[in-house]
Length: 188
Image (cartoon, rainbow, N blue to C red; front, side):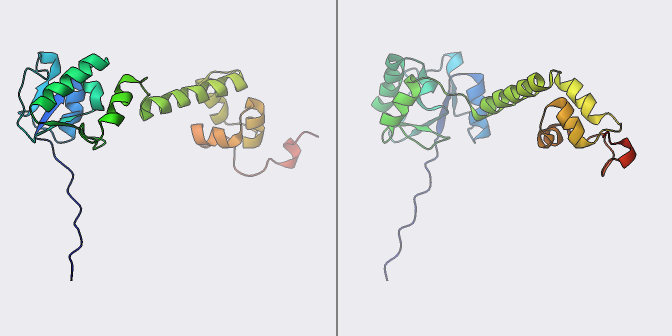
């Protein structure tokens, strides 16, 4: 009986390169060692250090770690490849030998915002929409929503011109008493 092929374990870099402190922190969180980390902001750039044939140099952000321009990136990659080593993006698993045609356009193309930045901007836009719909600031909407009184949650939502589901999601339970309003308080 033939044995099934076992999947290869993902390659693990032995050395790491960070162009700035933020990238170094990300690499250390991903398992880089202090001793094997080259720091670009301290002058330890490709060409200044030598790699062994077959070694992997781990980076984050792909080829952007080596600069913004195509010339700077190409010079750094050529220096690493001349030593027989390979660059690998530790977050995506793409390497410079097999995925260079994907990494280069991503590095020299326009930058895309991170997921955290896009979420922050969406939250800010939603807050502005709420404020413009109600004609009040966010904290004033919260005060009006939480204020104890005789208005029901539906009436408060109509007063604030904001859907009730949005008010519950953003500000929690209202200050209105539960249930329907008594009949003697309903205006006819």
